[in-house]
Length: 141
Image (cartoon, rainbow, N blue to C red; front, side):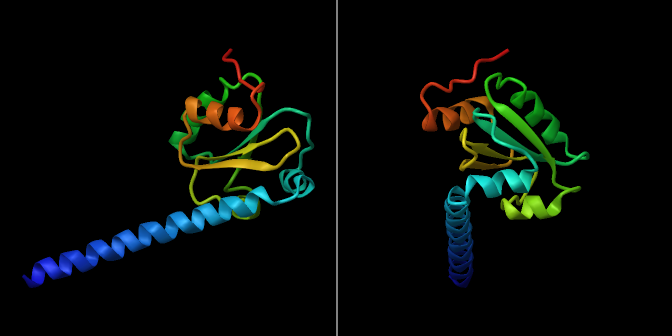
């Protein structure tokens, strides 16, 4: 009986931890959506060009990042900006990057519209872009 109580307490702690992390991530994403576009472009050392954008955070030693790059190559109508999180850790921290690969979807002005921690597949990225702009369907090459 004592083991069941210990297991129940551990399960409750794990569940509480998962809920807390999800809440924090959602709160952080909402904050990123409020960052002025000028600040986003300044942090990325880039300028708006009128297209939807995807910021890809990766590192040279990340195998999954190469897979993410191949997926991003299929977004013909979106601008892809690459940031090496190891070379630019302050930028990665500024955008709440906790793991690589991570991607941010930017609207044409430069506001953050979606955040993906971990590998983001092509359907997810297309959906995130389409959620903001019905005419922005990225065609494959």
